[in-house]
Amino acid sequence: MKEIFPEYYDLSEEDFSILWDNCIFVLDANILLKLYRYTPKTRGKFFEILNRLSSRLWLPHQVAKEYQHQRLNVIVEQEEKYKKMKETYERDPLEISDELYNRIIDELNNRIDEYKGLFQNDTIRPVIDSLFEDKIGLPFSQHDIEELIKNGEKRYSNNIPPGYEDARIKRDNQKFGDLILWLQTIKYACENKKPIILITDDRKEDWWWMHHGKISGPRQELIKEFLSEINMIVHIYNSNRFIDLAEKYLDLKKDVEASKEIERKSSEIYNPKSMKVGAITYSIDEEDPEEEKMYQILDKIRKKLREMPGITEEQAKLISSQIAGKYGEEHELEIEFHN
Figure 1 (cartoon, one colour):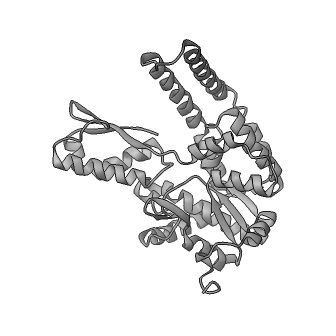
Figure 2: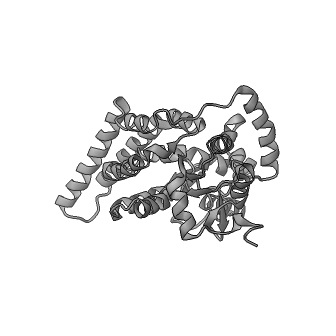
Figure 3: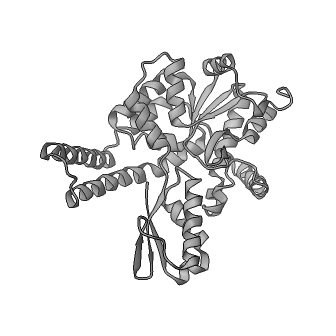
């Protein structure tokens, strides 16, 4: 059975060790962008590991492009996040000592100042530039992109991963980003005859097998396609699993606090916080609206977003709008999110 269906079987401990000793490590754009969301201490831990693996790092051109495109957005998003947290503490202070309250406010001010500084002088990007100097793939030619789009439409219509979930929330050719990343990775592995470990915090079902809301591993179709194309192994981890295994295989001291923060960031999910129907705002903590149709729509939105950790607020709003459809437009439905 295992010889016929290898994509359905886990690697042995020995095979894992061989893979870690010989593979190329490929990072998704969401991993690079998460470096801006970590505390400096956790970011330093991540960079320590990447430096240890520096000779075996590689970025698909698509990843580098997305990173450059989104970098400033993430910096601004983080500054706004900490500003809102500070406003919340100042408006509704918790029942804590003045000393602890002041420490919290000071820390939030420090994070706000950090991101203000990063917007003007990004000290993280030069480190990433250095790590990936001469380790970024070439873009596909226009002819390759045109062929990829044709084949991508067919793949997506048959729910062949990766990327078909993006077809529901992204417009035009932006929906092919994950597919471009994937095919550029296969091309690189084929040319260099190397197995791949791909690290991504994309948690949509076109990357992972989902069973009762839990991830059981990468999609078998991806493992099979990689094997059939170049007869090499590909494995996929989220950032938290990657850090745990890196500490093990690189014989690094375990950093519990960094691991907890990385785990928390890798599983961020957008949930409905409140919804506004016309002039009426409903809190998530209140009873659902009496109107049956609105209840059904909100329930669908909740269930869908729980299946898609890691999506952006813009994507969450687009998904919600699609689910609400014409009814949401007629009733001026607006939904706010938190993560």
